[in-house]
Amino acid sequence: MNFQHAITRLPGSNFAEGLTTAQMGSPDYSLTLHQHQAYCQALQQCGLQLTELGPLEDYPDSTFIEDVAVLLPGCAVITRPGASSRQGEIEQIRPLLSERFPRLEAIQAPGTMDGGDICEAGSHFFIGISHRTNEEGARQLAAILGSLGFTASTVDIRQEREILHLKSGIACLEGGRLVLIPSLSGRAEFVGWPRVVTTEEEAYGANCVQVNDFVLMASGFPRLQKDLLDLGYHPLVLDMSEYRKMDGGLSCLSLRY
Ligand code: GLY
Image (spheres, rainbow, N blue to C red):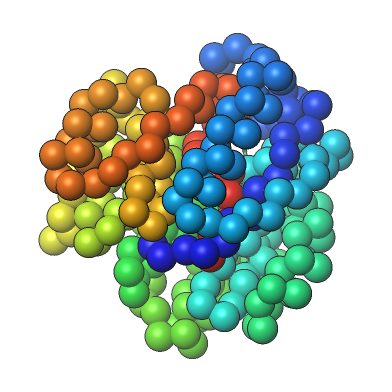
């Protein structure tokens, strides 16, 4: 949870043409940019040095840059996104990560993986098996994690209708406390983990992210915000309305290391 750097990518003008199931209307581009700017400022407020990449007009979902890599100590793993329209995004991040990380790995076919399915919880990683990340992708990442001394387990979310990625419904905060949506809170995979469970109405808020001393969270979830404050966390609240329309969460908008 102790990060020094973040990488973001500006949304392109065709952001509204990206993948979505949300049925919440089309995003307003100028508001999308405004929210992105506020997000980047929040990362800087958390003490991160920011690398802001330019938009990729060929890839309307590419602002969700977390999906193209999993960043580990001294090792970057390029993913293999599960949606065919997103697979070309990985070539756009490879040069930068190869400059920044001494070890570069990549998920290989037939493995698929979106970074939004990977939840770091201290020395353990939960890997979501979703409609984007398959078991072969998870197996490859678990082997890389094992070589670095981390453990991993999988969580099959393919029946979880409300979430795209595992991290749409779970976050791990400082101290190993999980934020979980109600349908994940009863799962055997999370037995024994301290937790905060959102209400059904506030499920979108579970996609929050601890960045150093702060927890970045979406606005509009007062109960979760109060729970986090009562537990001693410092929420930094951001309007994510336009990203939510595109099935996106705030964790997906940056790569942090
Ligand atoms: N719109 C985000 C995604 O589907 O990957």
